[in-house]
Length: 322
Image (cartoon, rainbow, N blue to C red; front, side):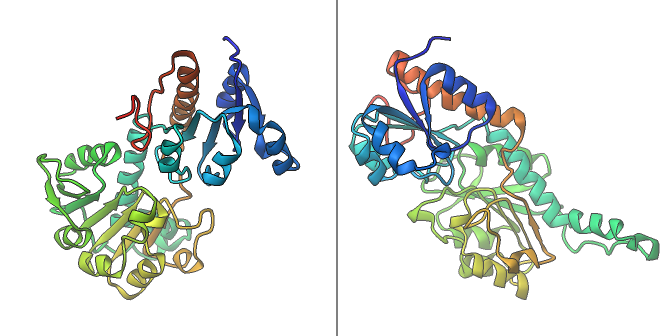
């Protein structure tokens, strides 16, 4: 493996599989290990040509302004709201993410959350573990997947993978997005309109100002008292106070959440709800998929410096430029 004459700023702890490749390929400077990150950054800033980062480690204008020779930011994850990609684009800096390689894993998680939230499987397991089965059967669940309608907010790669799986359950499918894709599924141009039409609503929306608290009290009211809400997109897209109220007062029946507004902090009120299935952001959390994501992060950096071409640039920094 050829060592490239490139200084790389590694902003967050990476899997050993990924870090070994970064250190073999680049002069990797681990900012997260520095006792004085500001001092380290000031010392190496003129040499840094690339950044490797991940969720909750922000690459903003202030950081980019400190790195005059920065060429590329390679982000671990399909979501990249932790990077100011628009500002990067105006500076000629490429931003990449890791799409496709995690779509199937996250879609599997969404389907698992949906089944668990609708059929109360985690609650039934706790019933068994508590020894209550000896005194009687677990109550019949009020909800089912039979004859239900599924709404997907955000029909990108992951959304389509969810839809393909959901079809095998016999669910009819509708979707919301910025544009009508003219496909077989029914399109709605508002979240409220989609929620009114479906029984189960899955969010695959990205983070950012455009989606901040998009799932609010109005949307949950439209989903209704037999509705189930699932989120494997971004926690910031949900008004958590409104969701908690909806679950507490029966505005909706249940929820399944893998993401939260202020991770890793989960509101106590959510933790206390018996009709909420909660996961610690494990949507893509298998060794297989995380390694594939890490490999794409490495390959984006390597390709850029070996061929001048990124593999998966984000929309705000297209290659070649449009």
